[in-house]
Structures are given as C-alpha cells and as structure tokens.
Length: 374
Image (cartoon, rainbow, N blue to C red; front, side):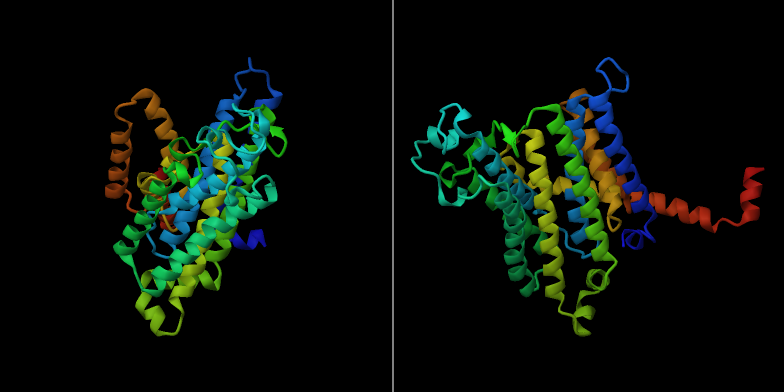
C-alpha cells in the first residue's frame, strides 16, 4: 500500500529514504560513538533535530489545508500549542512530590497560587493513554467546531484567514491568565519523567527523536493517502473552483471540515512531541506570529507537494538557529528577506524549482543534450 501511495511521488520517496537514513544513523552516532569522535552527534543536536522534525510535521499539516484545499490557516499554531499543553499536563502529573513544594497532587504553580485542589480538567492526565487521547481530541474538536461554523457560513479567503488568526490570539490571551489553571505566563515546565524514563537522559532523547521521525513519516503517508484519494481530488477541485464544485453536487463544507480536522490533529501530535524535547510549553506558542511563520515555511519549501513543506520547515528553522547565534539582532530581517526572495523568484518554492528542473531534463531532446555536452 505504501508503494502505491508513493508510486508517482519521487520527492516523497527521496524524503522518506533520507528520513529513514537519518533515523538510523543519528542514534548510532550519539550512543555508540565516543564523544571524542568527529562523527559523534551530541545530545543537544539530537534534541534540535527532533524539534525540527516536529516542525516538519506541523508544516505538512498546514500544507494539507493550504496547498490542497486552498485554506490559508493562520491559526495552526493554536492546534500545535493545544497538543503541547496536553502533553505538558501529563508530564506535570508525573512530577509528583519531586516538585519545589513537594505536593504529590498539585503542580508547583498551583501551590504557589494557593490552589487547594486539582481542577477537574486535569483529571486523567496522570495516565499516558488519556493524555494521548486528548492530544488528538482537543485540537480535533476545536477544529471541528470552528470549521463547522465557518464553513457552513461559507467564510472563505482572507476573511477565514483573519478568523483563524483571531482564534489563536484569543486562546493566547486566555492561557496567559493564571486562573485558567495552565501555568499562566510561565506555562508548564520542569518536567522529570515520560513513561517512567528520565526525560533528560540520552536514551530518552533518542527515543523522542525516533518518535518524532516515525510520526513525521506516518503523518506524511496519511496526508499522501488523503490527497491521492477521491476526497483529495475533490479538495483540489474546491481549491480551484469552489462554487463550481458545489454546483455539481458536492458538499463542500463536509470536505473542508474533514480535512481541516485531520490537519489540526496532526498539528496536535507535532506539539505533543515538541514539548518533552524543549522542556516547556507556554502561551507564547499561541502567538499569531508563530502561525504566520509556519506559512512561511510552507511557502519557501513549496506548497501542494507535502515534502516541500518539510524542506521549508527544516531549512528555515536551521537558518533561524544559525542567525540567532551569529546575528541575534538581524535574524528577523534575514527571515523576511528569505521569504521576499522566494516570493519573487521562486513562487512555487524550492520543491517547485526542483520539479521544473526535472521536467526540463525530461523534455530536452537527446540531440540537444549531446550538443550541450560537446
């Protein structure tokens, strides 16, 4: 089945092969090679690569709705953050009496704020299966309710983008409030264990990295299955001519709702894998600028390709890591300049450039190719 999904997706084949190779070599280079070896990969780099992979999964989720459905979502950072908070709540419940205040039931921030009992919505998060369920259900439910209201009202284009941005901004303001019970401005941090393993150990970091790689591969295959199915073909028709698709009998709002909800759930998984690797989740993750930055990743990599979103996410975030260290005061200008250059000279992104080069090579006559070689 996997081969059928990738039969006409050369870029996806290369991406998954590279991902498998990296997932194989990085643990060996981290655990098996001594620190004195030039090929040793430090744990810090493993964590950084794992974070990049979660960003890539988030970018794929955005590309699914933007590239194939035509919905420019400026609110996917909210779904990412909600998945992260669900994982953070589980991790906080694992701390127990090892916190600063030694309370076996309440997280430290609740003790500091003089809370006397655990809020009802924290119940069940001491179990991983329940947290995993909430990682999917909370972003999915929010996307379903939001999409049901927006798509039934036929809100499209820039108006829908503004509403999605307003959604994430409203959530950011709500989560900043201490009385909400999510740590307020400081968020959730100081995690100890995940599934009984020390979250700071090298082997746990490798496990999280591999989990991120597997989630990215599965997320890509899920999105690929959607876009190559009948549902995906109808989604492309909606993107290109929504009114015409509706007039011939398709329930456009149902197609939008289904794909938008799946995309939000993928973003939630990305957020859940992101939190234990960076060690914190706070309301800043809901920031509208974060959602806009995700769109920039997809635009630079090339939308409507899926693997292009991965390229863009990893490339931009690597650039961000480099520029924040080398040019801490100018990295935002570098990021903006990169986006402007891609918009002007690569409107279809890096993946579009690679596709055009491949098509040019395939259409070059043999005689012309021999003359060029001569």
